[in-house]
Length: 88
Picture 1 (cartoon, rainbow, N blue to C red):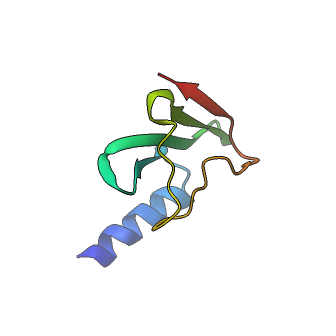
Picture 2: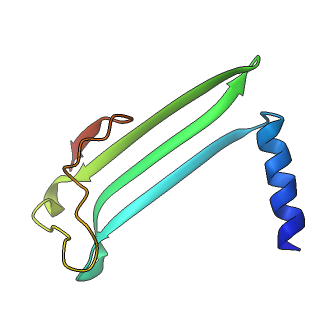
Picture 3: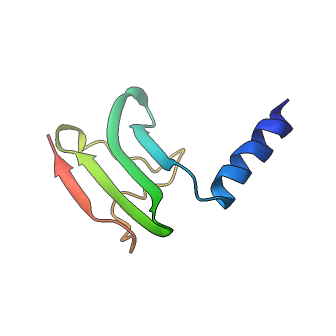
């Protein structure tokens, strides 16, 4: 069941086991095949110490496509937790 899977995952997190990765792709609200940016973050533990890293990439050739009608445009909001890079 989903509840058992959730409890197993929660136990792995509490035990600080594994590497955890989150990835987020943003597409243009009028054409979902057009990717405008991508973000990622991970956490893992080595010898009990937490190690984290993250990044945010803006796709250069799609920079002109800006959301804002149906979803908020968060591209230029300054996030303290990651650096934004322009990639082509």
